[in-house]
Image (cartoon, rainbow, N blue to C red; front, side, top):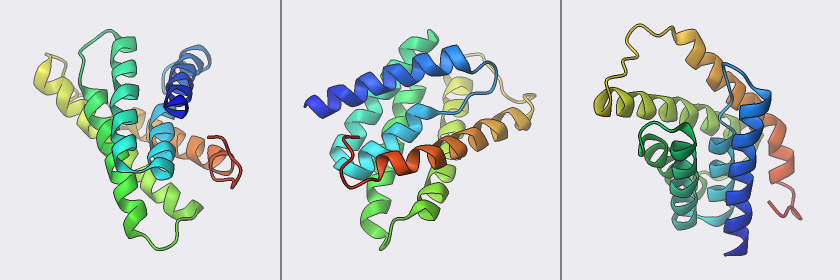
Amino acid sequence: MNILLLYIFFAYLTLTIQAIFFKGIKPDLVLVLVCFYSFKYGQARGITYGALAGLLMDTASGFIIGPNIISKSLSGFLTAALKENIFQWNITVNTIVISILSIMDMFIIYICFETFSKMSFHNRPWGISIMGVLYTIIAALVLYPLFHKKDAVF
């Protein structure tokens, strides 16, 4: 339970870092944390952490509760499911999985916003979303050595 609380603290810290250091287009550092956590601790814990981190993101945004909860818990589930079915997990596979999950996360959030609010993304330029995905991939590549050490606390 202590490690879950530590990761919740890291999610809160990453949201704070994103708010302070990134203006406009931001990487989804919480998605990276959810993927690494579910990779290390399995599906059930990954879904739980994804839902809690998504709830933290939704409450911090001050808009509607639910889109990040759904997308982050699904990301936790899929990361652990893919880990069980892929023979060798390395930085290339990790980057591909983060890329796919980041795109999926973006679409789930857009669909939830269009369904449950009057916010439309029909005329939004795709360059913003693509840059967000690229920033998330870069963050995952930078953080990969930190989270995949044998002795890592994370």
